[in-house]
Length: 149
Image 1 (cartoon, rainbow, N blue to C red):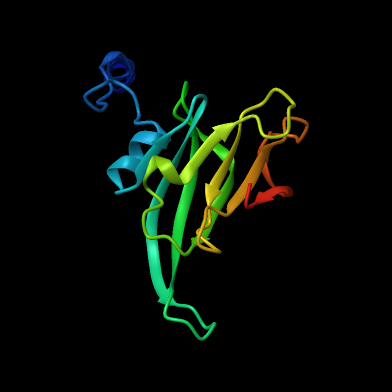
Image 2: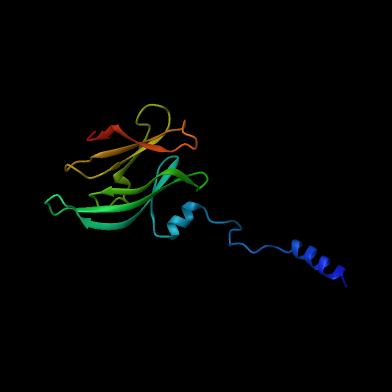
């Protein structure tokens, strides 16, 4: 009788483990899309944005400040890349590809990104540079490459 629990435990190790329909856990990218994020695809990574809040600005005008959650995922793996989070803009359509640029802004051979903050009536770009020398990579804000350019 003592052998029965051991045989039963060993047999349970051979049974298939239930998983999702694809047989793997959904990627971060898939989970963001399922949570209502819009995707703007770049050549090596994608930006996912979701409107979190729209509130009046306190500058004496009638413009609205839009607060977005922005996440970045690698196109090959679907995994989240370090950077971003809260993004502010005076534009309500940050989910549109026209609001984003993916290119090597500083000439270091890595794809960077810029987004149109929507100030001053014409595109006002905020630029984020890929920094591979950081421990886990990541993007950092660059005032040098930002502005009306």
